[in-house]
Amino acid sequence: MAAQSALIIGATGATGKHVLAEILASPSFSRVGEYGRRVTPLEQITVGKEKLEQKTVDFEKVEEAGLASGNWDVVFITLGTTKAAAGSAEAFEKIDREYVINSARAAKSANDSHKQRLIYISAQAANASSSLLYPRSKGMTELALADLGYADTIILRPGFLAGAERPQSRAVETVFGFVTALASHITDSAEIKVSVLAKAMRLAGQLGSSALPAVPGVTKEGNDTPFTVIANKGAIALAKTEA
Image 1 (tube, rainbow, N blue to C red):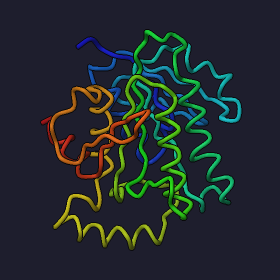
Image 2 (image 1 turned 60 degrees about the vertical axis):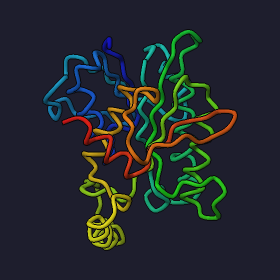
Image 3 (image 1 turned 180 degrees about the vertical axis):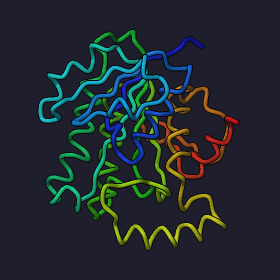
Image 4 (image 1 turned 180 degrees about the horizontal axis):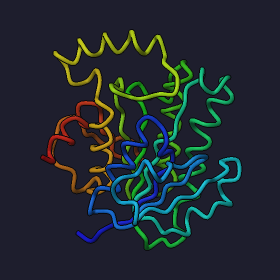
């Protein structure tokens, strides 16, 4: 398989930085773009620096950032937030849904013959019909991304992210982490190490839906615009397929 080009949006986040490291270290990707409100300091990058292109963008004007000019084969989106971090429900939806969808739209090539792949990290509870803000926003984002017309859309729905490094500690997450750590001994649906999730995401982008290995927790959803869903246990199983 020829080496591919990859664009990552949200590479400075808890999961995004692991995904960026995975992509840069992989020989399957020969050119990597990191676009975001902030970009990773070069001194923090130890492998693959020579194939990295960085650009800061204003997500309020992302259509002017020239994302599509890179003709990216795979677009990874790890951008996301919480209501608490955003400050309000409106700000949360702007960042978590509007910025994500607009970025994916802006990165889509105008050349219909260029078959691009879109990979997005959602959430285990994503449900566009939910009465709760977080799962509803994630579910609506998934459907909107599928409607953009990428040749292949893959959505990962992880459980609790174990080992995620965040700027500020979250007491609720700390408590929930203890619970999911215990649950992980009896189920592979409760949590996932952020490094394992990043590996699964990179493999999903590298292989695409049609070449994914037959592992549990990988399904198809959507009718008019179908997309692949990789559940928490699917991501863990996928990561294990590469020794």
